[in-house]
Length: 178
Image 1 (tube, rainbow, N blue to C red):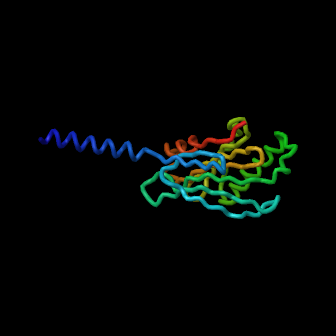
Image 2: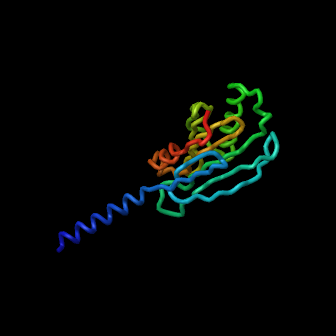
Image 3: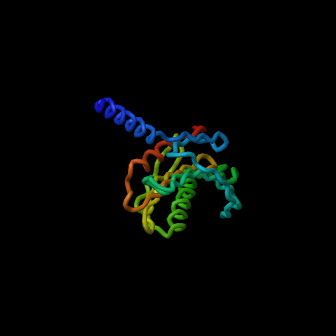
């Protein structure tokens, strides 16, 4: 009887461990992306003033209250005016991404730990890590025609390099591809 109870307990604990690892798929067809979050994210839209005018910043964010390695998981999409990218070349796209990197570092008064150019589904991007007071921000920014997609995870300093950072960043996929 004790052996059966022990086996049942182990079985139930293993099911709970597997379920704890299940993340929720979030598909935003209108924003043209899919990402997996630890739990259901919240979607908001903010108007932001930029050098090219007021833009809608769509944010899909999950901020755990406790029991998670990270403070924030988010995907952000902003669409620039199409005419701004009508004759854009690689240098112009790189300058737009440079501006996004500088803005992110400046906004948190942080220090840029790394900044790597990347390609994502044929589109230019950047993979960066910002050190800020008390923690780090991991960001992947992709310029898809006239749309900027930013995936980011914020963690405290003691949780740097945890597996959930990379799991979230790698879960991002574009619905629209070249």
